[in-house]
Image (cartoon, rainbow, N blue to C red):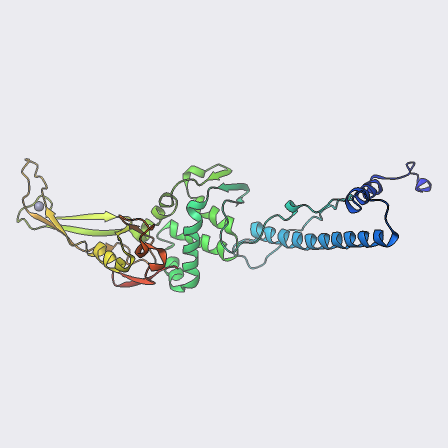
Length: 331
Ligand SMILES: [Zn+2]
C-alpha cells in the first residue's frame, strides 16, 4: 500500500493498534456480527471517543491558561504580557483518555499545600493547614470590609507583617493561592534557601504570634503603699485571650479581659530584702497601637464543644465590643 512512498512494511503501528482496539475493546472479541450491529457499535464508540477528546482539549486549554496566569502574572504592572505557549505535541497513537490529564480544578479558597515561585526558585509547600484557614479568613475580612484593608494599608510602613498581609491579599484576590501563601511563609527564617517548605506546626506559631503589632496591649499596675520600690509597673501582652464557657457570655468575658480590674498583695522587695505590704491594682488594658481593625481572639474554655450546645460555633455573637469599638465575627 505504501510501497510507492518508499516504505517497505505493509502496515504501521497506528493501524495495528486500531485493529487491536476494535477487536478487543470495541467488539469485545465478538467478531461474528451483522453489518448493522457492527456499524452501530463502532459509531457509538467513535462518537463517544470524539466527545472525550473535545472535552479534554477544552479543559486542558483552560487549565493551562489559568496555571500560567497564576504563576507568571505579576502583581501590579500596567501592561501584561503572557508567555508564548509552545504547542503541545499530540500523540499519534490511540490512547484512551486518562484521568490524570486533568491537572487541577480552580479553587475558591486556598487548597492544602501548593507550588509556586520565589524569584527564580520553585517552591513546594506541604502541611499548610497551619496558615490556610487564618490567611483566608483575614483575606475575606479585608475583602468584605474596606475599612480593615485601609487600616492595614496605613500600618504597612510600621510593621512588616502587616505589609506581608497586603501581599497575601493581592495574591488571593486574583486566585493566586499558592503565591499568597509563599509571600507569608517567605519571612520565616526556617525556610530560607529551601525548596520544600513543610509548614507543620501550630497556627499560633505560623500566624497569630506574627500579628503582635495589632494585638500588642498594655496594662498598668499601681501600688497603694506610700513607699513602694515599684509604685507603677507596665505589663505588656501580645495576644487577646479570653476565658469563656458560654458564647452568650462572650461580651462579658471580653469586658473582663479588658477591664482586668483585680488587685493583689504587692510583695515587691526592696534591695535590703524588705517586702512591700501595699496592694497592687491593675488598670484596664489598652492597645499600644490603638484598637486594631481586627483581632484573632483565643477563647479558652474549661468545657469542650461536645455536649455543650452553648459552645457550638453557631452560638457565637455576630459582633462584640472590644474597648468600645465594634468587632464583627468573620462568619
Ligand atoms: Zn508595693
